[in-house]
Amino acid sequence: MTQILIIDQAGKEKAIEARDGTSLMVAAKSAGIDMEGACEGCMACSTCHVIVDPAWADKLQPPAEAEQDMLDLTYGVTPNSRLSCQIVIAPQLDGLTVRLPATTRNMMG
Ligand code: FES
Image (tube, rainbow, N blue to C red):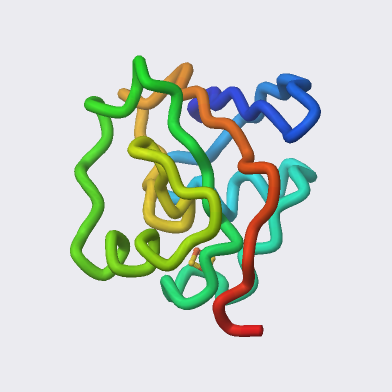
């Protein structure tokens, strides 16, 4: 298990235990984080948008083109924005810190 720190819209931090090999979106939802993940990881909704702590941004695999295309349409996107359904939990991500954006927009809705 890998520990991930999630900071919600109110600035409250919650450490979750995530199973290696699952996506951050699935791990966050399983841990009760208020994240919609409407398309269940198909890169079609952007409701799993997270903002990665700058200290961690370079440690993740860069987004694939399809993820970047979806991020380009995402509301409130930042240079460190990612779709959490595309972040695969692995031991080297222990301590990864992400922030939930103020709002998300369901591109499927
Ligand atoms: S869950 Fe829909 S884009 Fe990630």
